[in-house]
Length: 93
Image 1 (cartoon, rainbow, N blue to C red):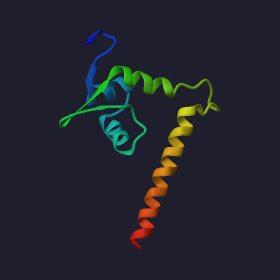
Image 2 (image 1 turned 45 degrees about the vertical axis):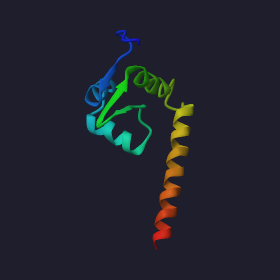
Image 3 (image 1 turned 90 degrees about the horizontal axis):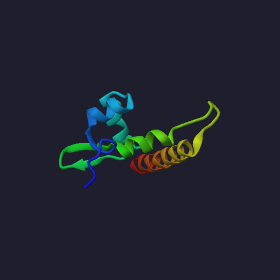
């Protein structure tokens, strides 16, 4: 098992600090999707630093007009979730 300094598991608060977010923002990203991959270990949430780095790298831009592929995918996922929610709401009426 690789436990080198460049790869380790960190707690949710440590991951939030690593990313420069509040723990609350990171928790919201877990709920809504679009955040970094995480591990669910019983009740505990942990993050692999490689996943945090990959998530950050996917958001790298070269200019303000560069939307990036990850941003387009996230928009499509949000639209799909919204469509499902709208269908559920319509079915309740």
